[in-house]
Image (spheres, helix red, strand yellow):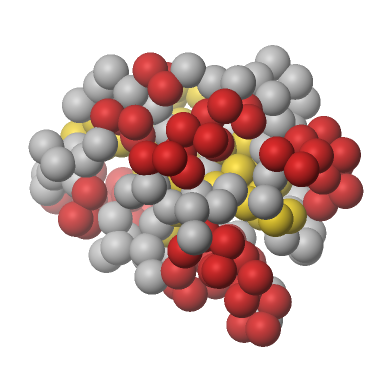
Length: 185
């Protein structure tokens, strides 16, 4: 995505909007993770319980650091080996991180995205964004901008055009404490 194409998405995010945007495998729903009203709207659009927590994506590891507890060097090496890429890690969170992101846990799911458009969006926004698949819970995720618009309608403020990264499955999710795979990629 070129910078001029990001302007509407940035305006939408800055004013508390919810967007659909391409990621590695599917379109994601995103918003400002620190805007409680935007997150509540996103969860309502998706029909998802806040207790499940959400994923944050970013363009680099450094912008995730303020959200997370320090990790042991061995885990830091595993993160570096998997990012940017389609691996989401569930890691211990800083005490200030809102429950609307963590659900009922002391962890947060995070990923440094390998999708150039999603990374450019995060970079332009200046930090991480919420990223959950663009679909109603229990329904297939949107894989195109047209599917996102048709399935979610005007509940989403903006659909960012562009292709997904071409992966067949959503990101793998791993527990940073145990290394266990929570969702196969």
